[in-house]
Amino acid sequence: MNPQKPLPQATPETQEYWDGLQRGELRIQRCRSCNRHYFYPRPFCPHPGCHSRDVEWTTVSGKGKLHSYVIAHRAHPAFAAPYVIAVVALDEGPKMMTNILIDDPRPETLPADAPVEIVYETVNEKVTLPKFRLV
Amino acid sequence: MPDSRALRRKVAIVGAAETDTVGYLPNHSTLQLHAESAFNALADAGLTLDDVDGIATAGVSPAQLTEYLGIMPRYLDGTSVGGCSFLIHVSHAVAAIAAGYADVVLVTHGESGRSRVGVGGFGGGASTPGGQFEAPFGVFGPPSMFSVPIVHYMKRYGLTEEQLAAVSVSTRQWASMNPRALMRDPITIADVLNSRLIAWPLHLLNCCLVTDGGGALVLVSEERAKDFPKPPVWILGRGESVQHTNISQMWDYSEWTAAAKITGPEAFRMADLDHSAIDHLMLYDAFSHTPIYGLEALGFVGAGEAGPWFEEMRGAPGGALPVNTNGGGLSYTHTGMYGMFAIQEAVRQLRGEAAAQINDVETSLVHGPGGWFSATSTLILGNQ
Image (cartoon, rainbow over all chains, first blue to last red):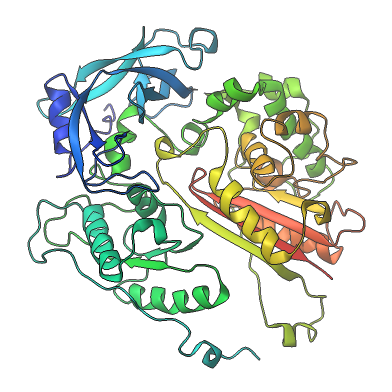
């Protein structure tokens, strides 16, 4: 029996994010007080020195840079090693965890700060995951 | 003798509020209930989250709460013993505020007891932030979470895999002098780089052991401290903080911000010591990079200088500032929550009874993380 990959379960304040991915849109929030985007979703700005509750949903580009990563060789039971667990920095500022879709991942082919773009990976009728690939 | 009466009328509650409504709230996650209560209580006090420098909560961890709120306090209390936890948080906060550990302590409760929205234990639950924003990407234990910042740091400062390996080599040299250490055979940089890949850039020998064990401490007041067989080891300084629980939410991958901005400065200020007065370091080494981040954040070297420092074996036997003299989590033992063993070695060094005893040690600094740079604590201990 193959172990199942862990899947997210949306909460009220994150539903719009998951719904957006299902439509092929990257929806994240922006603070109307300090004009900065943030991630993950919550009904107030988490930036120190702001913490405003005047926030809105925006659709962003899905483009960013490979901020940091590991090449996992000791794999989660539902994943095939090696695979890339990455944090990308979106062009709009926020950072998010993802996988980089790449065959034969090696440090030489994954330079830090390389440009990346989103790939919408539909899992089922409720879940689409934001994966990224090198541009 | 210390007397709790000394704290009488020293601390007051100045803000108090509940969520906007209570009852059936299926549109609120557990963390949302914490946040709404927090905003309301702070508004009641005429304060904002930026005024808060102490946090206490139960049910969710202080790490989950601070990450969600976007704060990095200098006092935390995660005592989680059921319904009376919040009474205990208030009790602790009285002492903490009286001691100067925090000026404004925020105690929060939020529980989706009926709707069960966003409910999860430590690191668990598909609807928690970790369950939604990290678990789907195959993170699998500390090696694939604690390690995520390293590549960013390598790009920024030029840290090499050889320098990462040098931390393991240096630590093994200490372990070879400690008969209780699990791993005592000397290793080379090449041995580290040739060991099995776990999560590049980490190889097996960059990762701590997984062992069984335990430790305990007994603390008494100054007045009683002279009445014991062993000489006292004084707590000269302390600092604590917490900022995130998911590694993707760490503020800055190029530094250990909570240690640099909060726990180190607080511990040094309380101890009234500067770096030159520290004779011995215990830098919790879950992985090779943890002491690198720690050495820099505490200000013993500048940003980006810790890799070369370890490569020059300055923390090894014969080096200028001995680091992890028991052999560390990398080679001595690591049960999962290693911090107790780091304190134990500092006490042994300060008593003069360590296996790899260093000369003329009067002060020791013990520093480490909880989670993956999530919580942070620093202690400065001394024997004078």
